Image (cartoon, rainbow, N blue to C red):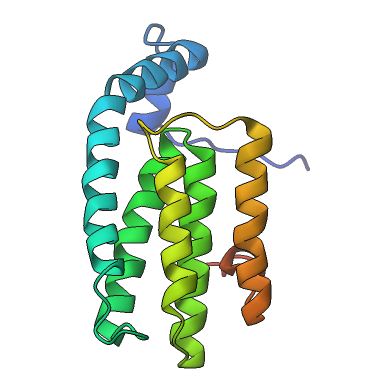
Length: 170
């Protein structure tokens, strides 16, 4: 006996069945245009966040150490900048900020202090920020490879390298 398949009528299935609306490519193009219209505002927010981050990094609690609260604030600001940099295609900045977060997180977990490593990251980040003199792809890769050496010096791995597959939600 053949199996009968029943497709219930839902509001969504009825909407999908109707003609009209945007094609997928038109919707993607419209989203890209909308996103691009926000670039100036996003770059302003990145600049303001970098200013806060730089002020924080240049004022450690002790000459050779940041407090745990300062380290957590570096991570929070870094996360905000990573989100915007990645969304708006600032790849070099995105990688440099991720590296800063990796070093900061590693230092926090290891209960180590290293103000110079964090300050070097900030100087590099400023070179890659929107509005800074554009670096060539080769120059960008060179400075990012130097940041990777700092991570390796401490024996830390990139958080992106250590993340496992996403756990399915229950």
